[in-house]
Image (cartoon, rainbow, N blue to C red; front, side):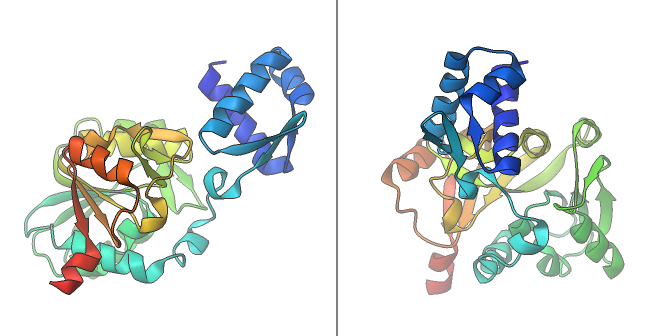
Length: 260
């Protein structure tokens, strides 16, 4: 088992059980206690757990992603304003990729105003709403259905995207960090989002202010993998602002658009 796989399993056990011990983890994975301590130290450095004497306890905000229905209510006004600005980048007769993030999903009603639009998505709510409108051509990405995310993910979804080329991709994230880049909570989502980014002429990341500066478990790619970041507030973290600028990412602040 690779180190990354073992560390993700540790996080899964932590989420399920509420705490983990070095001795039990060493027994489960068949490795030494010092190896497990090194794993816990690495995960703590990435703010994915908190070490305790003999084990670790979770940091729920970076380890756990609530179901879609819960997430869509969080920062909803901010997400809608971000989505409105993001949708303004879409032109008639374009082909766009929309991932299954809740902020991206908020773009749906604004896209109904476009003509000749083709949307490729792994989001079940987005696909159904746009298809019912009759005004947008919809391609639903195949793959394993994750009911809590209302999305298709996994290797089949990644393979589905392999031969596509689109005008723009809109990507949601769990964290944006100057060192870790664009991140999400697990490899399944990271793999699909990474494939989406690779197939688009222009990549737009959408994220409310609560995601900025965070580094969650799985990396999608470096900051330079996107051309734009649309958010709802000024970026307070100086090191992140500098890193985005160095990576060539143009930051569009929804609050600036309102002022204009």
